[in-house]
Image (cartoon, rainbow, N blue to C red; front, top):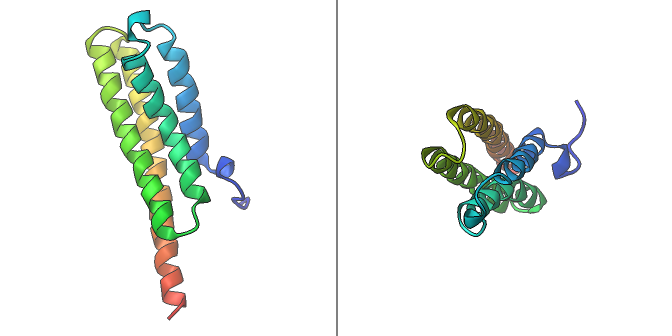
Amino acid sequence: MDKIRDFTDLIVWKKAHKLSVDIYKLTENFPKSEQYSLTSQIRRASSSVSANIAEGFGRLTPKDKEHFYIMASGSLYELRNHLYLAQDIDYIDKNLHTEFNEKCIIVHQLLNGLLRAHRSSKINNQDSNK
């Protein structure tokens, strides 16, 4: 297994980044009247996921790392909410909504794995310091 040296080595960051790129492409087709409202909110929420993962990776204390990973999780929920709204007002169809919702769920599962690994290493480090 390759050593994780940078946030860009994290599978969860790669998937979150790809999700954000896909969201930007998806929202290009939204009405221009939404440019400063729903389009902007969806884009900010999607880019916030990978940005918070990156920021958490760069933090030095376990508490700070965990905080940013949890913020990334919150941004995923926000994104999913906005995607439901986009479907309900007919900016995206049910198939696109399902596709993007599934991508969000995959990123969330990976993020939960990262959080579990982080918490486990935090506990192991505390035990070794005793």
